[in-house]
Amino acid sequence: MAYRVLADLLVLLHLGFVVFVVAGGFLVWRWPRVAWAHLPAVAWGVWIEWSAGICPLTPLENRLRAAGGEAGYDTSFVEHYVMPLLYPVGLTPAVQAWLGAGVIAVNLLAYGVWLWRWRLSRSAQAEGTP
Image: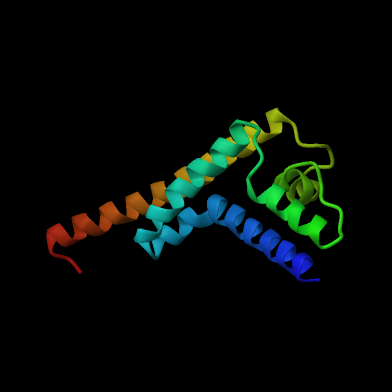
């Protein structure tokens, strides 16, 4: 039972990390120092997608499930949990490349807006307006 709970918690952690990779750039608008954790997370997420690799959390989850008497899965976390929600077909390297590009696009938007707002506030401060 404990291994099953740990595996489920690991899935939640994994999902949280995926959400952070995709949308964490928007947290930078409020807390700019989040970028120090977010940018390496984005680099990792894009690298995993573009290399068609499997995150180390996936085998760990499988081991925990096996130790708890459950069956693990042979595919990646994204293919097992996320892809069935987004796409009816299996995960392919081409889809992973698009997912990686999507992560970059969303984060370029988030950081671009943040940089634009930061520059506006700096120019307003230089002009002496509040």
